[in-house]
Length: 423
Ligand code: RM4
Ligand code: MN
Ligand code: MN
Image 1 (cartoon, rainbow, N blue to C red):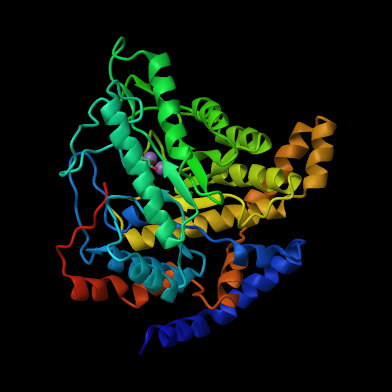
Image 2 (cartoon, rainbow, N blue to C red):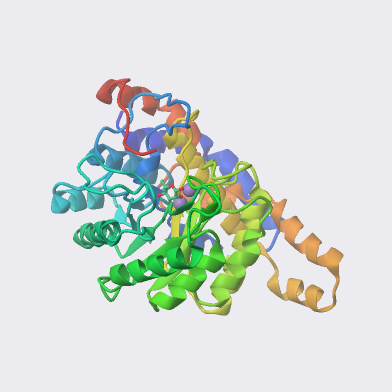
C-alpha cells in the first residue's frame, strides 16, 4: 500500500475516537471560529541539521537510515510535512548543506510542498578548505583578515539563500572569550557590529537578518552576543531589516523568556524563534518536553503582542525548530516538537484576553492565574488533530510513523551506518 492509502486507513480507524474528543471540547469551551484556520496556517520550519541523531560531546549513536545528503534531508522534511502538514519549510545550515544545483533542490523541495526558511551561516567551526581559523572568534576577531573571511562567508550564505527563495539569514556567533582579561569587550562588540554592517549591506530589500544570542558555550567566560540586550542593541544599529532571534535554550537558568519575547515584540525587534527545550543549558531537547508551561506563556505573549500590532501570526515572525537529540529517532523527535508548539499556540488562542486584562487592572492575581492555567490545563490535542485532518495529514503522526515502520524502510533504503551532517 502506498503512503496515502496507509494514512487514509489509519485515519479511518481513529476517526470515531477523534470525533468524540473534538465534539467534547467544542461543548466544553468556547472555541474562537478562526482557531482551526489559524492552526492550519501555522507552519514551523525544520532545521536541516536535526535530521540525524545529534551527538553529545562524548559520543554519537546513530539510529540508522539517516539522510546522507541534502536531497535525503529534504525527503525527510517532506515526510514530516506529509504527516503533520505543518512543517512546510526547511532551514539550511551552510556549509553543512550547500545545494550543488539550487534549481534542482528548489524543485525537489517544492515537490514536497516545502519552502526555504532562513539560511544559517557557520563561523563557529573551521572547515577543511578554510584559510584562517575561527579559534579566537569570527566577526569579532582581532585580525581584519579573519573578520573578512567570516563576512564573506555570510555573504555567500545569503547568495545561496537567494538562489533557493529564502528570505532571511540567521547569524549565530560563538564569538567570545574563555578567560577574564582575554578580550577587550568594547572592541569585540564594535568589531562585531562593524562586520555585521558589511553583511547587512548586502541583504536584498525583502530580506531579514536574524541575530541570535547565547549566554555561553563554546566560550565560557563571555559571549559577545550573549543576551537579548546585546543582540537588540546590535540589530538597532544595523537597521529595519535586522531582528533578534530567540533560541529558547540560550538563556541563563530561570530567565523569564516570555517577558523578553513580549518586550522585543513591543519594540518591533523580535524576528523569530529557534524552538527547543532545556533543563540546564543549550540542551536542544524536544520543544515542550521539559517546560511546557513556559512554552505556553511564551505563546500567550506572542498572540497578545502580535494581535496588538495587527501582525499575521503565520507570516510575520520566523518559526523554526532548533533541536536535535542523541537518543531519539530524529523524525519522531521533530514530530513531537511541532505538536508541542501547536498545542501551546492553540492554548494561547483560547485565552480570554478581555477577562485577563480586567483581572490585571483589578490586581486580581488569583483570577489572572486561573485564566491562564485553566487554558493550559485544557486538552487541546483534538483541535490540533482536527486542523491536521482538514489539511489531509495524519490524526496522530508519531503513532502512524511507528505503525507504518518508516524508520525500518529508511534503514533499508539508506543503510544502518549513514550519518547526517550537523553537530
Ligand atoms: C547553536 C545555535 C545555532 C545553531 C547551532 C548549530 O547553538 O543555536 O542556531 O545553528 O547551534
Ligand atoms: Mn539556535
Ligand atoms: Mn543552540
